[in-house]
Length: 157
Length: 205
Image (cartoon, rainbow over all chains, first blue to last red; front, side, top):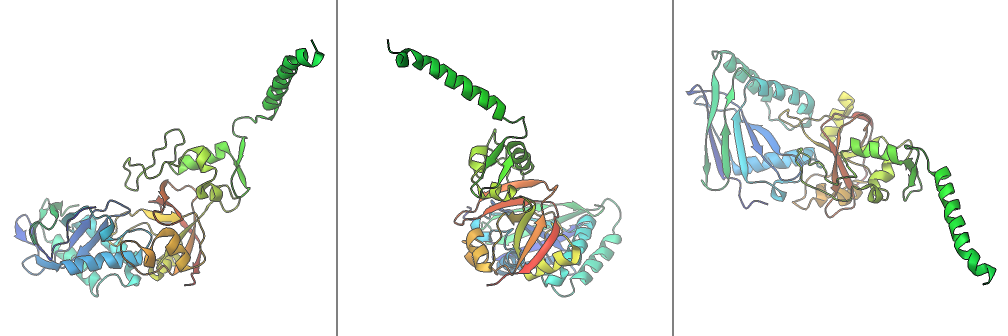
């Protein structure tokens, strides 16, 4: 098991070909040694494409996932690798989120207005020219708390 | 030399011949040999191997699939001789119950499964998720929690207790064997397939 800790603050900025992407959503992945990795969405970003997420919020998401699927996740403290991966939600991920919401929406997992956020992001992505790359700038506090990786995505995906 | 002495080797040869003949007569054709498990049920070796291969259990090379498809060995009990007494085989060998796999879930998942008629295989972000099942039917949340080390018994910290037991058909699913539960008494299998829901029952505490 890793000795890494969740950051107290995860700061994210989404950009589309270098320009801020207001209303961006971010998919966070916390890889696990056992059972499933935690994968969930945070956001939306503000008008500058920025979002601050506390470690408490990150942990809270994993706890709610555990509560929803008691057999499928072992808990963050039982096998988190210490890595944290973030990517901006592109069109393909947005479609997945819509289907996920259709399946799990009634469980109370998603925040109020979640589908509004999806709609807003879809509108924002539709205004981008083809071939735009979505990137994420990530900063964590404390800086050495865990290994962070930002993955670029493609708005056409 | 007394007759009993000189006939002893002959009798031995005859006994071996008779046993050999009996073995030939009683050795079933491939696919018909049977083994017994602790419950007294039986299945054929070929049936068992087929089912174990479906679960990616290879009795020739006891390396089990990881949930993520990697090669880490979870459990080395996956050879046929040991499987004869494993709970896994006990269930597989039980006629009529061989295809039922159980899952201990939240209200939310029970509702989603009942709405769709199958047990969803995606996570809250819409990605494929490994869905864990047990071969054992537990009657209460506490029994399931203790055996599977989940919910209130999760060693990493208590989470919500399961409130429903779902039964699903495992027919045609691509299974991985998760092994024996650390600290518990259960066995877990996992699949990324969405299994057909056979039934949902609310668990007692």
